[in-house]
Image 1 (spheres, rainbow, N blue to C red):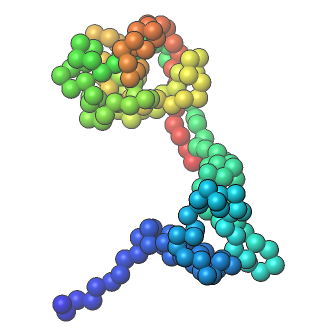
Image 2 (tube, helix red, strand yellow; image 1 turned 180 degrees about the horizontal axis):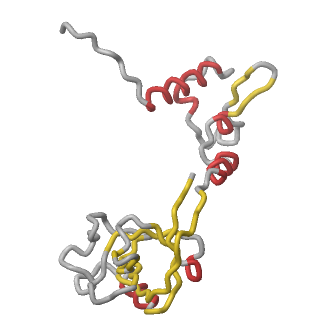
Image 3 (cartoon, rainbow, N blue to C red; image 1 turned 180 degrees about the vertical axis):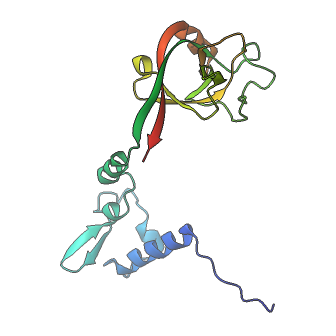
Length: 188
């Protein structure tokens, strides 16, 4: 035991300290822990309020992670999209069924699990297939939605993309069509 052990405070401990300090500062100093739990009798009471200086701040306003202002801040930080190139390709849909993939239908060729926004691509630029991780938009169909190349198609399908769908029927409904794709980058 010759070494000094430092204490590590995680986010849960900080949140607990903040919440406890809020409870202590509230004008309900004689209340017990169970008095804070909403019941049918006290459900109509006003939310917890902490007196600070001349005014007061409600608990909901202080700790609202879903408020409009925080959502607006997130929207303001959207990355800038730059279109690098455009291609006209054949697009089709696929799902995670063994007859449409290989013996690991939920794992892409890049080793990632399938999810919404994954495409398989055999699109060539300068004699090379576009690499895994390449960001692609299909504006005529999906607007600003960004897809990521994480899978490949059979080599016989050149200049094709295959959009992953969670259900076989959705992939069939998408069908096969000619589309314009944009290769893009995101810049913060």
